[in-house]
Length: 126
Image (cartoon, rainbow, N blue to C red; front, side, top):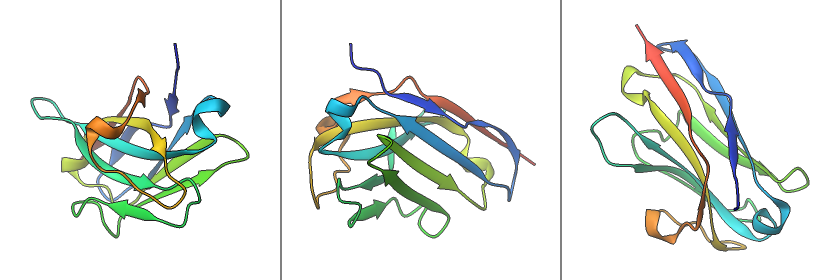
């Protein structure tokens, strides 16, 4: 079973920062577009950010644009999500996902992603 492993979540005060990491198996990561999603209690899973394999294309949800940054290190099979200026409404379980091959393509539909991590909790307090 393919496993993506997220880390870096935690409890942080509003206005603070966190950096999430996601390690994927090389055979999956090597050509895949990657994405981060989140799911808050009682809400559907939503797209947060995506990045193409080349790293040249990135796309963000409007709610996080200017505050979050997605990046990847293909040599380490790892994708990152830097969360800055955190707000209470950013509280959620954050998931990374591997999508189809996409050298310069970013996907934001949940259905396009084939492999998912178990999630890491981000909690923002006052």
